[in-house]
Amino acid sequence: MSSEPSSLPDYVLDPSAVLKDTAEWRNKTPPDYSRTRADFERTKKMTHEPGSLISIVENLVKNWEIEQSYKVNLAEWRTVDPNCYSFSVNGGPVRTGEEMLRLGTYNALLAPNEFYGPEQNDFKSSHVTFKGMMPTFAWEVLEVYCGPPRVVFRWRHWGEMRRDYSGINDKGERVKVPAHGGVLDIEGVTVALVNDSLQLQKIETWYDPNALFREMGKCPVMGGAAAAQE
Picture: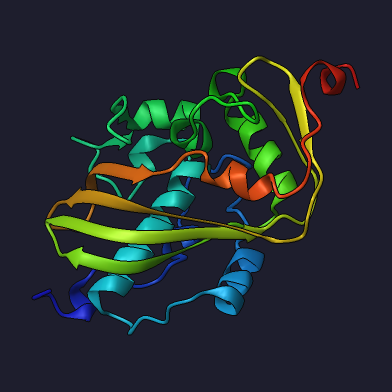
């Protein structure tokens, strides 16, 4: 990149920059990412040079995730270009910022299956489901293949299955999976278009949406009608 680090926006230099913002937060106050950041430092595979392209990409996406999940006013998202922001997964529907606010990242990223049904869950229930099972879900960039304005990168998302999974599947049934204490580890590739301010304009992500559930399924599944009656 040609820009000097000092001239770059804070959201590409500090992974928690937007947590310092005065904004309309979903839970009234900024969320606490201290456990996630600690687990990230403890279990990450990569260490990036501050100010490097790969570090800039990682910080941008981490701040985007905070805004996507916890800032309820799209106009207050600093990491996206409000004039042309969109998000899609595996070539599927293109979501606007307002749609992403309503759906949440879990429902936008996951496909209907025997474990989880995006159509059966709203923003709040999706977060209760996955954060209940996996208190922290760290994220890192593994490789960046090309730089802005079109940024292509491979990433890793992981966390420990510390508590039982309990969610509503695509048939509206309650499904439970006992915690196995192991790491749920998924990878994917994202193509992102950014503007001159390094704000996200378009995100296209490719990954296996069933990978997380295969990782969970190292233990027997308790689901279907029997589980729904509990």
